[in-house]
Image 1: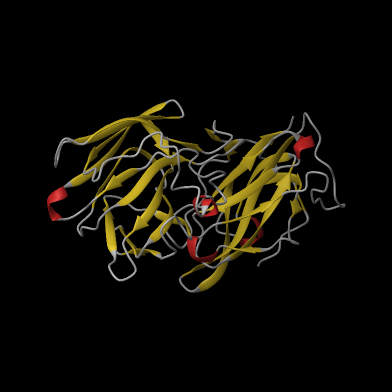
Image 2 (image 1 turned 180 degrees about the horizontal axis):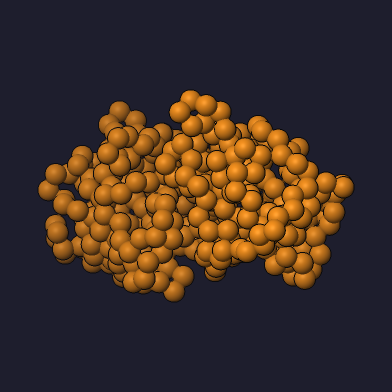
Amino acid sequence: MQTFPRTFTSASTAVLLSLNVTFAQSVWTDWTSATAPGPGQESAAGALGGVNVSFTGDLEPAAIIDASYSFWVSGAATYTSPLVTAPPPTGDVLRVWGGPSTGEQVIRFSTPVRDPILAILSLGAGSAPARYVFDRPFVIESVGPGYFGNGPLVALAGNVLEGREGNGLVRFPGEHSELRFTIPVAEYWSGFTVGLAGTVGARRCGSASPNSTGLVGAMAAGGSVVVADNELRLSAIRLPLYTYGYFLCSRTPALVPGAGGSQGTLCLGGEVGRFNAQIVNSGPFGTFGITLDLASLPSPTGAVAAAAGESWHFQCWYRDAVAGAATSNFTDSVAIDFL
């Protein structure tokens, strides 16, 4: 990891406001209706945090809505991640059969949503893999045990998700009005539901510089902004795989291009604290996170406590490479107004 001065000052204090994030906790679709009269005529509808969601495709053997039990309870931790604060809370699941005759599965949102997530249940079997072929890129957010087993989910070329009794979360970076996929290989059924990550704060500093993956690293914060709760988590997403990095914090925003020889822009000014006692690795999904101790935030002069009424800015600095040469990059930043 490159180093940079312990204190930054900058003549530029302009801050670009990007997106005000509104969901403090993860939200999942409440599926309220479904019909399965025959092949090519199946549909479902529900609500997702004030956004209407519809599905058309192959429901076989139909959807489960408002069940007294939940397939998501078994292996619930599989359906959480640094961005997803809680698994699906209900028994709702859309079950799809697949096969060459089942056509396209389409999920539509009444207004565009950012980074929608599919919770996947039992895709494929141990000896018989199944695939969802999406019409756009995705990121596997988590994989683990589920109601029926503990097989892998793997991303293949061509936006293909393959499972062998796979369970987990799949995220679609960016804003989307719909998601489309096909299921070329039939199995008895696999299931899914649709959600949005739970985040707090406001993303600032504009879009970060692209990294070696072609994506831009991004910050997210989840949990509580109440200082007394001491339950705030930071996450960095869309990073190179298996890279190291750490988080930064400051009360002062800024714009410092190329700080420390980086390819990106430091969004913090004034006294910049470094969480270098919590260096983390992005692993196979290109994401990592930490939980903060709000009574002990780093600064160049020692630990300080956050206080209600203060605004703090957080950012991630991570290793990268350009044309084989070692360098580093920054995510955007997130601003937290503490209560």
